Image (tube, rainbow, N blue to C red):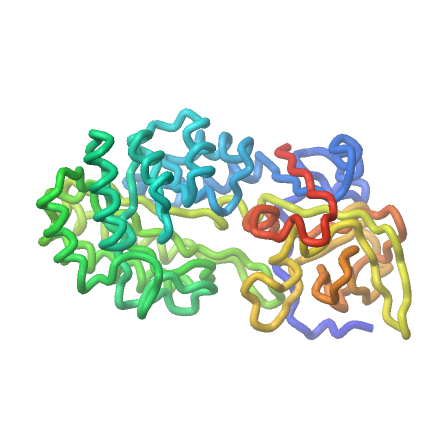
Length: 412
C-alpha cells in the first residue's frame, strides 16, 4: 500500500480523458500512437498552447508584450504556432535564429541572447537585423568590429546581471557572479562606450531566475528590475525603447507543488505601468517566457516492453528514457530526485493501482522515469505518459547516449 498522506502531484486536468484513455489534441492516445507510427514520442497539444497564451493576455496588462523563448522547445512546427500567439521570439543560438526567421516574424521582434555567441552567430544576427543582447564588454568589441566590416549598424540591448536574485528560483540567472550579462555596477561605463560607437541602442534585458512558483518572489524581483532599469536609463546613449524583464514563471512538476498564482504578479505590473510610462516614456516592456507557455501542453509517451519483478519490486521497462527526457529522470538540475507526474495513458480511470518503477532500456541505473510510484497496473504494450513535458525535453537530453533511436515529436 502507498501512503496517501504523502504530497501528491498537482492534478493534470489540462488533458481530457475519454473511455479510460488520455486525449491529446482531441485524439485518443492509442490512436495517436498509431498515427505517429512508433514510440517513444513527444506530443504537444496546440489547443493548450493557444489557451495558455490567451490566459496570459487576459490577466497581464495590455501594455506588456509577450515573448516566447525558443530554447524551451525549438520544434519548428511548435515555434511557428507560437509565433502567431506572441509578440516576439527570443533565441539562444544560430540554429534557433534560423527557426525564428523561418516563421516570418519581423526581425525587430527577434532577439538573440547567450553568453557565448560566436563571431559566426553575431554575423548571422547582424545580417538578419535582429536585436542582439550584449553579454560582456568583450562581446561588445567583437560585435563592433564585425559591424564595421559588414557595414551594418547593430541593434543592441544590454543584458544586465543585477545584484539581486529571484528568490526561491529553480535556476538562478542573476545576482552574484554569473556568466550571464554585464554586472549592473559596470553597465554605466558600457553604455558610455556604446555612445561612442555606431550602434542602435534599444534598452535592457534584466532577468534573474527561472522556474519560480512563488508570486511574492516574482513580484519583488520585477519591482527591483524596474527600479534598476530607471536608474541605468540615466546613463543610456538614447531613450530606452525596450525593457525585457525575463520571466521566471514556473509550472508544478513535483509532489506538493501548486500552480503559480498570476494575480499578484499581474496586479504589481498594473501598478508599475504608469510609473514606467513617466520614467521611461518610450519603453515597451516585454515578458520573456518559455516553460510557462509550453511546458504543460506536452507529454512524453513510451511503450512498456517488459514487466518484471526483482526481489519484490515491480519494474515497467519502456522503450523510452533519460536519453529523450533527461529532466524526468532527475538528471537535469535536481539535487534530490523527485518524480514528474506519470500515468498509464491508456488506463486513466481504473482503480487497480500498484507501486512500480518505470525505467528505460539504457544500461545505467540513472535511466529512471518513475521511482516507486502508484500507477494503474500496466502490461506489455501499454503506454506510459510523462506529463509536464512540453519544455526542456528532447533537445535538453543526450539523444545519442548508447545510440538508441531518437524520439519523434508531433503537434496535434
